[in-house]
Length: 409
Image (cartoon, rainbow, N blue to C red):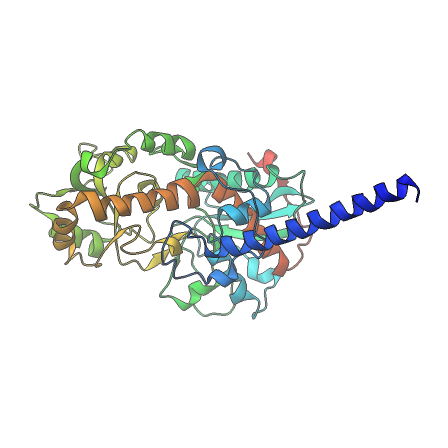
């Protein structure tokens, strides 16, 4: 036969063999990834069967990708498979309820927030409340900056569907008491004991842009925290806490009582008018143990403490934020009771053996949160998934008066 025939036949056979080989490799890779430990244990809020079905061969490296706001959807899924629990929960709640344009009202009970719109890929502002207060204004602008950054990082890849949403920036969202209408609002936190808070969509808090003036830009805070990195045995062998008691006297008062006179405690109440006991957030990282307490609701301080290379100590919490489902008692933090009645015993136990359980918990907290789930990359991925999921079930927005994000600033 003609030589061209044999060349063609040979090429087809080569393609067939390669196809078979790659198919087997792909199936083996998927099987291996299903069995491979993630470096975290007992993420009990998340059924592994609900993780993204498409497994990427791309590998996340926090040093290279942790500050990358432009990861693709596939890369986000590969890097942060357990990030989206709260989005899935809220979507499940609202798919069985009527979500109308009235659900998006910026309820007057909320002191501060905004109603915003994505229109032809652009972020626009429809309404604001609370801009007269400096702290609220900073929070609103920080949230809008996060959204804008997450959008523009991937705008050349895929445009977002037009949608409208409302977010509140006070420490907790409020709803009409008579239940006359059910509102859908983005918030920093929700109370797990309140049925009305099942309607809340959780968003990353303002610290992921900047905490002004206490900690500055988030990436800079992370860099300062890393400057205190050391083995637990080489850090100051104490538990540190600073805060004002009045925001939650039940919890914080109990902490002060439980720690008074204890050799392991550097626990002090302070007032904003007296800075004698002030300790910057990154300075907390020089201590072996860092304590988080709830305030008026959740405490945004936890995000900063989890970026230390220290052992987090956390009491039973009523409030949750967008990544709290990844907290695993005894694995990436030390649990204590809400009244701190077991704090002394816990501290004596872990201080007695910093080499093993204390270091293990510190390592797990660092790799889970600082290097992965509270990274700037994770924050951007979360925002994009939140907006895409929300827009898939929210009503199509009307072209009401609005101004561009750029003009708003």
